[in-house]
Image: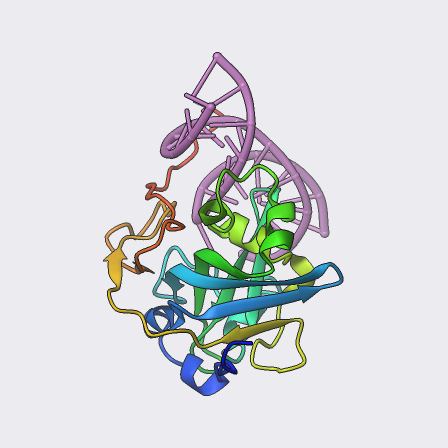
Length: 207
DNA sequence: AGGCTGATCACCT
DNA sequence: GGTGATCAGCCTC
């Protein structure tokens, strides 16, 4: 058995999403479902803020959908994307202030067999959680996990502190069509880091 | 050339 | 405007 991992607290996550993003690098997100437990070491994240961030779900105020992002830090914000997948965020900022960190990629550190079975097509283990939808999928997270308190020891999903990271890389957020100049994507050296892609605006239907 | 992913789009309340 | 859903681009074979 490894050392007893330290759980992240609401307090340390109740900071600006940019700071929370750096804090989350190297941490481990662990998810337990009826099928088993999978843990992922976070290697790539993106910060999303509120009214001042055009790329944020909270840019236009509080709704039932983004409500969790306005709540206390340390909660899990899961959203449905492109009609097929889910993406997971760790809520940051103080209660009432919107902010979250999108988990973009990770390395599976627990439950490797289960993780592999959830991603039959993966060519290598480094690819299992490479990309936000893959990460969420390998952890077995979906809509029902929205709002889970990651600081609760009894929760199905928990967040643990990891080994200190040495070098943090910074760049613009992936797949975002607006605020491209804001360098709010952070990652550490890992084969699981996803490749950069600029956001695209779909062509309008009518000419 | 095909498969896979994904902070966008189009429609309904 | 909010919520539920899809097809254009990127990556690999």
